[in-house]
Image 1 (cartoon, rainbow, N blue to C red):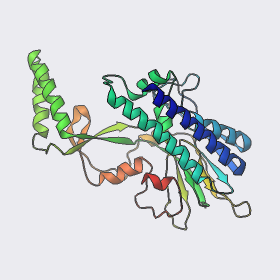
Image 2: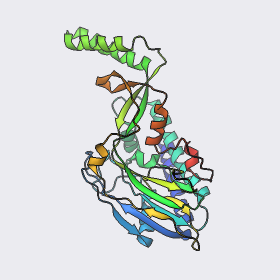
Image 3: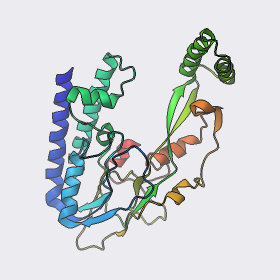
Image 4: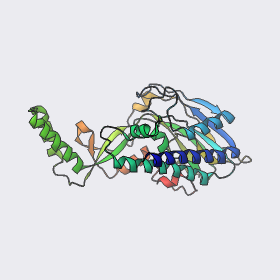
Length: 321
């Protein structure tokens, strides 16, 4: 119950502190881009990053790794992000793996607890905040600390705009919900709603019960980073840049070329992706689309995974694939 979740929370904090203790003395270079904290759930029209370097960047990175709660006027439906990169003179991969495992352990305990109760309209985040009595932000816990045991030749920060996260929904679940809504409409003598539910049921009646539909949830603008380790023109890894990435550095070797994070361009973000895959709309009202096999690649790209990468250096990035 609450004690298991509290223990997992405290252990998670300890492991993040230990990770900070592991990488701090090894820092060779540090750059981060500070983003404004949002006090509303609305997407900001303009985002101007503020570049910070050196000791101040290190301090900000330490705080960000430990930041699992809202800060100041931060809206609980938003997240704090600190894109950047930190060069270390020797590997911190093992400590990062332990810190990431502690995050996953907390989320596992929380998932086990929520399965035991009927949350109804309460979200998992609200449930965690109620139990821990803390302004917890789950998305800041779900992040993976990204560490690469390699020396990059280039680090490129960009904004990901006009993307969406696909949620898989079994057809059987949709049919069950539509049938309940249809019965309610009939009892209420709501003819327009009754007719609409009948049309929607008919549209998926020929699909197998175990077929999967996709519901696309728009993602707020977020930074990502492309890392180039080899000589190929294509990047080797593209994780989200919610936290600084850690890479190896040799003070005697040339430093990587760094393309910093610029302002968020809302006009550019509204443009459709050139590689957007056609989707078959099934129930527009629910934003449900028929799963297309090639969407796997698009979904992977949206979540920072490179399906073509031949990255062979040790990293936490490989653990996601």
